[in-house]
Length: 403
Image (cartoon, rainbow, N blue to C red; front, side, top):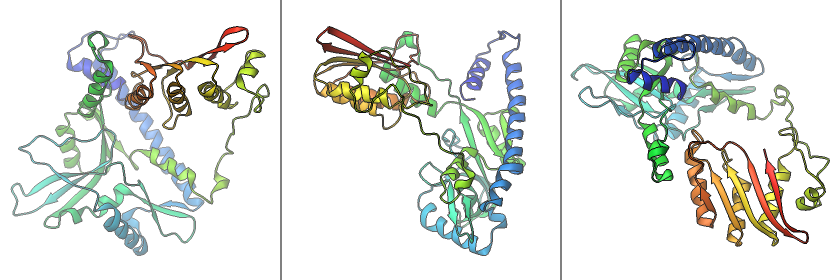
């Protein structure tokens, strides 16, 4: 959404009059997307409200709505708010005479409407950013199973504590989506890493392309946010349940509910790989085909780790596209370079939304002595390729992983 709709929004702002291959104008495409995504959102919440949440409640996993909470749950939620939430959050006042505050992309906020007869105007809005450090799911006492409240619901319920001299009229969670189609102009890029860091900075302030807010939000508040963010009515998504349902994935790790889980698939060891034998010995006997995720990726990692410490390995060449935070491959490449091997890594800085992590990897690799290439101009490196150059009695041998 950030990329496709963002790109169309940019075309619309530039007055692009061309049509797509189906003959649809930019405005027609945006209208069609709004209609289709509206249907998808409706189906999503119908599933959540009608099947998932009631189904979880039957097994004792229950979300507590603060408007319906028991005294015990309210006391527990208030204690969590006072001890863990209130000291962290900082509301932002909205002054009509000043620029609208900068909101973080895809982060939850709570918009509050306040009244104070002595103020001019007597009513005003403020925003409480919820940040990313506080847990979204707050554990509450439960006689059986697991009871929880959502962070945004508790903050909205007790938002008046941030404004003791004003009356709280309403408090509603919302979030925005910013344009993610801010890309690098490679033809004009002199320093690719520095220019990519500038692109990342630009994304933080890119124009908004969507507002998600509860369907029960006051119309005045919804319109205030929409107009302040420069959005059209079709850019507003009215949710009939909690925003950002991905947070509920945390529930899958709850202890004591094993009967609700599908069995975990453990990648199998390839019968062609002997764990007691060097990978170079295994590969010298013939090519090896691994089918992921059914078979383990461990032989590939082990091959690179062996190469890092093998005195007969002269060089390692590796592409890196989307890499895990604790990557054993990056660690092995660093060790190999520190031991004097010739190590080259192509780090794809243009891996969309992974650019920041890849920049960190590139710097770490360079500090270890790895020769880093920041992708290939006008191409995006997706493949996982590794070449290991090894000196053997039969001569120089190249071992290749391609995936």
